[in-house]
Length: 207
Image (cartoon, rainbow, N blue to C red; front, top):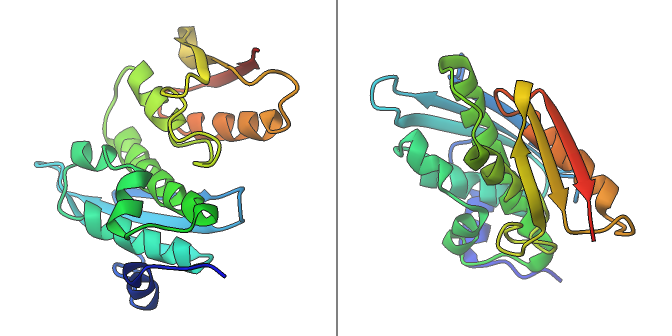
C-alpha cells in the first residue's frame, strides 16, 4: 500500500491552479512512459518583467501526478522565467514532504511540463543560440529518478557536442547491452527535439 504525506493528500483532494489559460504565452503537453500519465501546462508571462503571472495545469493520471502538478504551479507562480527554470523535481518532492519511490517520476513529469511550456514561450518570443547548458538542463530531467537523479553527476553523460545546423551529439555510459537503452534513446530524442534550435539528435552508447 502506498503511503502519502498529508500535504500530498491535500493537493490531491484540493488541487491548485487546475484549468486552462485561453491564449497562453507558453503551452506544453508532456507524458510519462513510466506509467502513461500526462500533464498539460499553460503559462502567462509579463513581457517586461518575465514573471510568470499565471499558470494552470490539467492532469490525467494518479494522485501523485495531480499533487505534483498542483504543488509545482504554486511554487512557480510569481517567479521569473529564470527562477522557474531552476526548479527541480526534488524541490517539488521536498515541498510535498516526500513521495513513494515508485511515484517519483510524477515529479519529473511536472517539471518536464513546466520547462516545455517555458521553452514554447521562449521559442515564440526570442531568437537565441543553442547552448550546451540548455541541452544539459533537459537531459538532467529525462531519465527516471530511480535510474539517475542527475546524469551529469552520475557520469552517465560521456560526451556532448553541439554540432553545426542544430545537431546534438551525445554519448551515454550505458553500453549496447543495457536493456533500457532504446527507451532512453527515444526519450532523449523526443525531449531534446523540442528545444528551439535543435534539428537533429544523435545518441550513442559506450561502455
